Length: 305
Image (cartoon, rainbow, N blue to C red; front, side):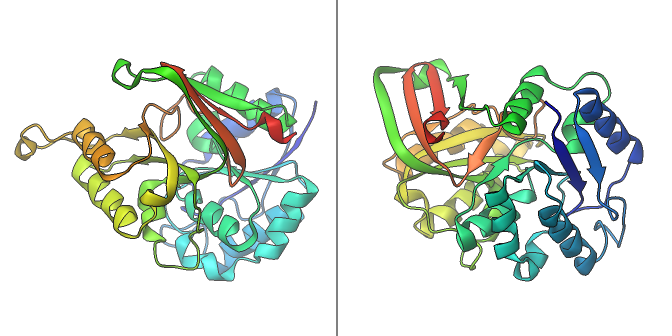
């Protein structure tokens, strides 16, 4: 079924137009109608246009009537314009059926929308990073995106490492799913743009962040009382960092082990989300069920329909 997908650039400037053109061609090949925002290739310093240009792009996406508003890329730029976003207009667009989709820097937009309106957005692919790749896009990413576009998505499942195996069924019911990029989320602590989610399921990922930096950002969420208010924490992929000789055995697993000593709720890893090719689509702000048995983990939201 043909869907209207609106492409816009709310964060960093597009560096390679060919990547975007490839992504657009792939979405069209899937049968979708693709509309490019007028400022999709705008540039001001490192940003996709100055602050006013990017705010206008967000508001055009909200007014587009599209089924999906998809970012070209992340990078940086949304946190500095959060006060200028017309959140009621975004929430009305979501109510009319527009799904706002993205990741990374988009975490700022998603959590601000959730804090201000309670509306659901989607953590998922970006046009360039996922559909504009050389070679074929990841099958699972594409299938999850198509489920999102069609409104057929009901959940996501993955396999846990052996060390996290549960012999008894663990269930967390009707908990708000939220989170995203750890660096962006931690930068919102203490601001009006971070939602006050209690008894939620927090998911986190990051890229180019050494494990000690991941731990430092987690301590910020911990000391702010955020981690202690959750029913479960799901860790996605933490990629593209360089270990140092100085680490002497300090690694990402060290951070995970430390985190489990700090919180009472379960912490699960390997959620298929982050700056990786294989990524699921996750409804930020939606009530979900978490079920874990053996090494199988599921986040389910199909009960909402």
